[in-house]
Figure 1 (cartoon, helix red, strand yellow):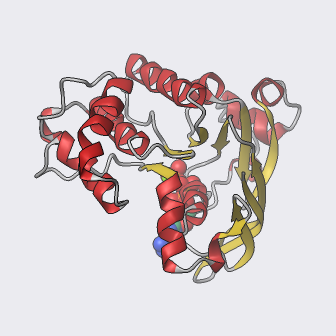
Figure 2 (cartoon, rainbow, N blue to C red; figure 1 turned 30 degrees about the vertical axis):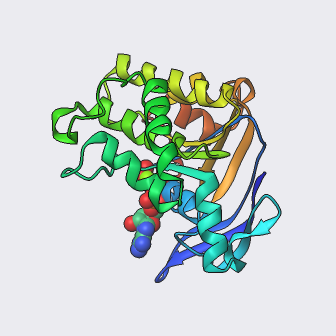
Length: 250
Ligand SMILES: Nc1ncnc2c1ncn2[C@@H]1O[C@H](COP(=O)(O)OP(=O)(O)OP(=O)(O)O)[C@@H](O)[C@H]1O
Ligand SMILES: [Mg+2]
């Protein structure tokens, strides 16, 4: 299980996370929604130890991320796949080579690479794209390669940062299905998004990050019916709330 306990993170004088606490139960997709700039990506980076909280703790399977030695961090990143907000593929490498790179970095045996790559591309329905270069793929395909690269590690967890941003509605729906499929394969997901359709399609639980804390968290169906005006307004995308409710924390 992943657990964030009262996590604080500031950049200079700007406090982004101000006591964020969240539990990510295993075997489910937990979605984090929230305005642009509220610290959703920062939260994911704290989970895999790319950023350290100023205070509070992130615990993954009983170990505190901030207290990990370099070799423990490598092990942590071997069990957490990360699908970046931008697909973050190397343009000079084929899809196969991009996925292989991640596997080699985790010291996966060379003899396993081909099977792992083929299997993961099949899951994202890109079985014939392995020899292509990222520039030959659409944005949606590149995002799916990002997912394939993450699942090739056979991770226990996958963190998805804005998996549907910039995708057309049909391609977004494919991505949602994919996130449901990885969950059904037993992978625990954390999905950061401001795409409400995606949140309620792929998410089992939804948490709203607001002013540096989790404003509300619960089963997707419960959040959808929330009485909290801040959460309601975000979910409904209404621009007509008082400015105090609209403030994105830039
Ligand atoms: N390494 C960093 N150094 C300085 N400031 C940072 C750093 N990382 C993030 N920030 C700032 O922290 C704030 C939160 O950033 P974050 O990327 O987590 O937002 P977000 O919720 O993911 O937004 P979006 O929905 O636009 O992706 C932003 O104002 C950003 O500029
Ligand atoms: Mg972000």
